[in-house]
Length: 263
Image (cartoon, rainbow, N blue to C red; front, side, top):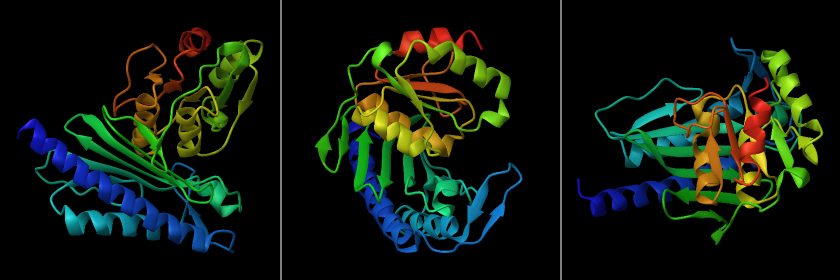
């Protein structure tokens, strides 16, 4: 496939990702802050019928317009075909917030071409934010280009992994190592929210120890395309197989990696 044709194919999929994220977002808003039942999954996380409904909306649109594309979605079986494209979907990032009526949640959709994420779309519907990025073409919020902040470590606000119970000793040690170096911490309970804040320059970095690919695929592309930096804890550039990562404005990256080396 020629480069021009591949770009056209990616463009078409970006438009569909935006459409799917907006449609799912409208449904999430319609069902927000209502009594809702949930079940606990094997990994301890929660899922609701709203997660499943949002995923059905997104997967349904993909299967309608790109029926031979591969799909990896958090709550569904994988759809695998002989395609160079794979969709990576988190229909409701921040499920625990959603259940409790906390309005920090969103929908995350990424597109992988071969081994590289080439499209990222995150819709934060109650915040009124539709973020999108295409590799090499910048990051946008509601159609306006955005950039990471320029703040250095002493003025930095850092979003930190909220699942401290999973690696308590290491995560608390890193918090201690950073405590006297940065301005403050935040824990939002939504990777999508944290990474959009980094991309938009509202915070300087997000550090995650236990994310799945559907949590971060779209958001890490947003950060990179907004001029930021993303790596694993050893400084190696991220991939879809990354589990632990730092996503930052670049100005604070080395300082954070030094703190992480003390874990």
